[in-house]
Length: 186
Image (cartoon, rainbow, N blue to C red; front, side, top):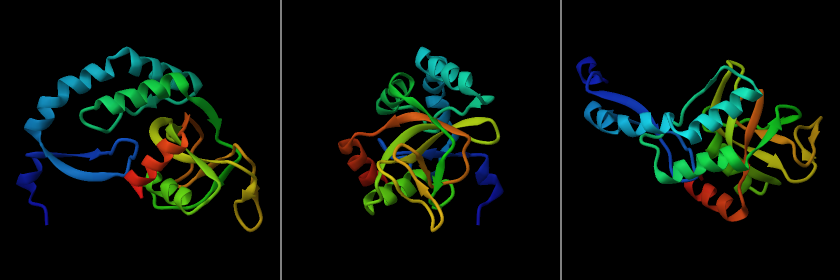
């Protein structure tokens, strides 16, 4: 049971691994957050984030939710730069829904990939129905495959595992990046 007086000493945030985004919630002392706040503020004011923010809002939506990692590490900064310059738009339809755990898109898509589902792993941002772009990972079908007993999906179509999205913007991982992603999130 959480004591209310302890709540004022900590904040909760989400930490991720290098290519994986498996959500791991943990409490962080407020003094630690204060120490990293300048770096987070600098990142949010950076040209790279501004470029990505402008690009995503140009597609649609009202807000880009900033990276949840505190602080954004160098690998995160490289990923954001790649997302801004090497990514592409994925329309929200047609989409094959392969239900997984809510809020665990990275784990879900890593599991599908490791089970031999004919997908590539894509990562970047997805626009939700609430108008917010959030970091997200999804599958991209590599060939025509059954989606349900009544439906099939074609190569290049999105394979979603963690909820309904409007559209996607991101990049497809190479096979070596996908292997690391699965190791980090499996």
